[in-house]
Length: 235
Ligand SMILES: O=C(O)CCC(=O)C(=O)O
Ligand SMILES: [Fe+2]
Image (tube, rainbow, N blue to C red; front, side, top):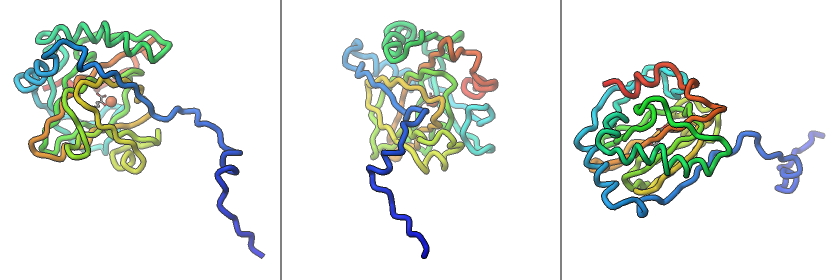
């Protein structure tokens, strides 16, 4: 007689279960908007409107998780411009924000050798733009959001659970979606979790975020992949 294998009970499944060696994706949020001096957000949004430039991104570097031939339009204010126009933001990056990030890790966090590698103000408009799928090369990513995102607006940060996800479809197959709010400062390590930003769902919607990169002694800036700077900052 053929043996019928019955589904395991939860108790039986737990008897064999081991926690995964790779931690599930996790993040930390500081609600900093209300404690920064008034105008921090409107000044950066104004800067986004005045100074953002567009360029075309191609996923040629090792950290990209896109299908090969795709070309994605990116709109951003680069770090050089940000430091010139809002020096206080650069101060926060190397100062208080770095201290806040440092509370989440045993390691010392290093700022980057160039300001373009450190900071960027990224913009998505409601015309189908999205931010490309990739893994981060840096062990600590900071993201200060300037706009509210929701399921209605779109612009969620979509993060793969499976470290093997290689492109948007594979990320979508098993993912979590985060909808940040204006004034929230996120920190996470997304070296093993491919992620991208979904397109905005409303034509009048805007998404703006300051991205901040930190490296560390065990993951120094020299791991940054060749060709990434050219694709992110070239005009
Ligand atoms: O804009 C976001 O929410 C994510 C940006 C990102 O993944 C990055 O800058 O590495
Ligand atoms: Fe990222």
